[in-house]
Image (tube, rainbow, N blue to C red; front, side, top):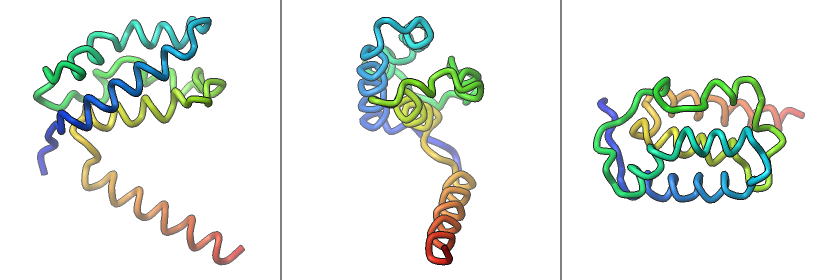
Length: 114
């Protein structure tokens, strides 16, 4: 299935991400992410993003793997970025949905067996 942009969800995710990043004005890491993402955030808020963007073309992803934003949890930079990244890529793929469902089922099974 081809991914498509939901402009309403993307706009909401962009606004939330921008707000979250603005909550850490003293953090050069977070402000650097805001600067890198600003063009995409602005396009998303103005509903100019019409086609999904590849994950590798969304700035900042490599920093999440390195744990750079772990200290920024209230509000969570990680959660806001992931939500925005999902929407700008056109939502979760069917494979990602299956993986999430499988993971949730394993977590429920583990809690039941613990």
